[in-house]
Length: 479
Image (cartoon, rainbow, N blue to C red; front, side, top):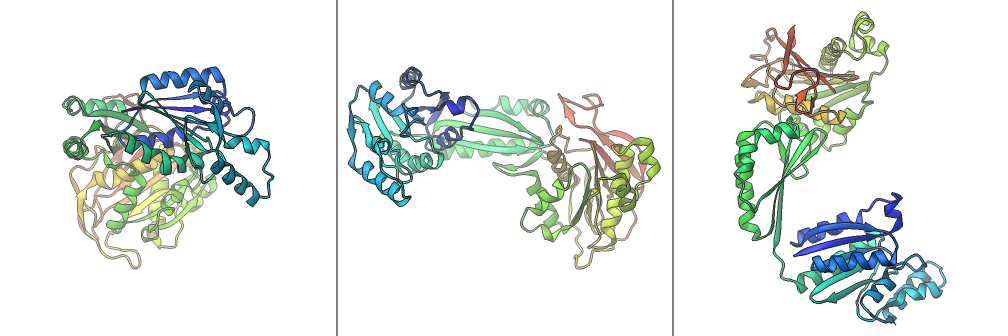
């Protein structure tokens, strides 16, 4: 079962308004098992309306049109469709009474323009619009259906739900469309496609894979059209389970899952705490966290430290390094991360600055914070935090896996500090070995955003670039 959606209005073509109607209509049709083959926007032109609608009728069983049903002279859709279906106009008493009542309630006179809204093509079935003055219309020809709806979004939405979809489900024997979307992070589209190439090639012909990239994540959608839904849904779950074994550290979740939700969940479950201190992001990192219910369980404080003076005074950044390397530099970002780690660890009420810090238990818990000693892979915490911050910056996607500490870490003893200084992210992590034991020296790694299959400033084949040693291992991430 195929459908065409036509939106009518010069205001759409000149960019004066955004066409949200076709998006909503497509969702309704898709959920019912009707495949939308095309969406078309056209102007308020009689010839164009007829030509487009006739072409849609020839290729689709269902055509849904919105716009052009108002009472003014530029609203020509109704008269044009009457001409196309070779139909006279008739006066609909129910529509007239409804329009007159609505206008009376608003203190508006029922004039000839309003009366014209009760004139409808004699051949159509009127779809009563309880939320507006323009009725919807249902036409049929040779087993195909054309529906015309008002362009006002909330009126269109009610008509789709209350009138159009029930009628379509009664009129046609519909099969199902099944979609399932996995959200991945840490691999750009090209690298992800290469990594899962064998898995993709093994998909059965009826399953269609779509790559849907956006900042910080790539969505993988598996779709099956006009199928038996239950069995196909099980097959899709099985295929995604196989994919999980290929990219286990790059999966955020399904459908609408976001990186910040994953980080929120991990911080809450692991009794970690978070403090942020930002510069160029202007507090947006803190805002994204605190907007989520329950953030008070882990979020300590946030400060926007914009000036060089505040970097030095609040974070302990060496002014000489700012003068030598610039505020936007790895050297300064490293000190920001270390400074926010110290500040957040001093007391719960202390402000953290220019970066983000995550403090775990290192034998000296925050007030009221219970001891916690889970074991889990380092990718599942620190890389998610890293990926979340990168998604805030809107820059290139970052690899979830770094070449620092391998295997598993004891989260009874980690410290993580993430500094954001202009275009630098710095992530510091202390694996630790046991509560109260100071961590040993570890390595520093630098990772740039992935651009066109490679790391910015690094060869495409490179991983994290080892830069040296630091008492608290850190990773500087260019945003």
